[in-house]
Length: 465
Image (cartoon, rainbow, N blue to C red):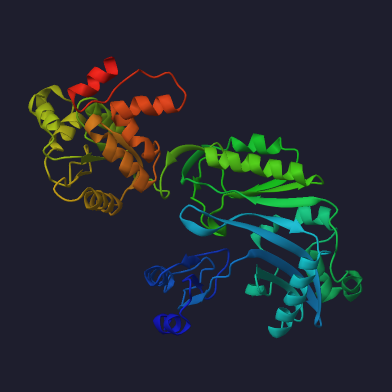
């Protein structure tokens, strides 16, 4: 069906949206720029249970609408439509997802743009027979005018966390107007067709977490409360709970309601929160992990030398231990094990020494698994095989640690792939190559050693002269 539709349509440039036929909150909504991405999205959505708890029976493939997205919240009674709020979505690409909610501005309705959107919204309500009650409509303002994304015959969602600031900015909410539409015609008739100007500026921040894991505390709360524009906040997580990496409405950890008559100050406060998200100071993560579980494991790459003590420490702290060897034939690793007297080690360390074997299942008081990185194939394939083997284990990997220098690069790569606490992968080479190390420090404006990287004697003579 999809192949036929796309071949007949032949979009140029190729950009389509693939999403569930019935869902909400940007749940499994994908922007695809080629047929393979469409196929991948179809396979992920079709047959899965969506955010509303409904099994997806098929998928929807639509034209990608390029433009700013607005929300027109309305209330109707006997076909008379009244716009009660107009929002401008702040959606951005983040966490490998195209449509992450960052927040939404409340907008006045007395502009030419607003009137165009309201007129379009009313026509859609008529076409879909939404004659009574609330409507929550998402519309893109494209180059050729407004175009419907979707509409629900219900109130604006999001736990109604927006209602307090709307009350202050407009005087009433969609909930108030909806009740009036059904049970109080006099009050409904008293509402204007649209509310016009705002009494104050409003923005609701949707918290975006760049990481997932178990949180110890939320230090960002005190900073949020000190913002000039702060009005209220709603959290879906608390200390000791699990935070998802934010990809849609269902995975956002909370929201903040900001109100200020000064739009400049409002925007400054928004950026203060975004800075905390980017720097990772919103949450204090106890463990970074992909999903909550009590079967947590720590990976140690090349568990010899001091790495053997790290591995023993993993077991002592109650975590499952997984050992990865960056090379089964690493001379240093083999020599370390050959020169260690097994009787001098405690039981946990004995199990660690035994992990040099290629046996995957280890004794219960030692490593639960060992994985061998295959140096005989391409690095990309070897890394992917190692990652797949780790992901297929019945454990939640909460940390990856290098045991020795030989394991630093692979540990960096595994941290990046498994999304555990890590150092930036793009600086991995500078942390291992001594010349790059010095030059990177120098580039940062920090005192570094004077040096020369030489491949021939003349390079050294020139440097020293």
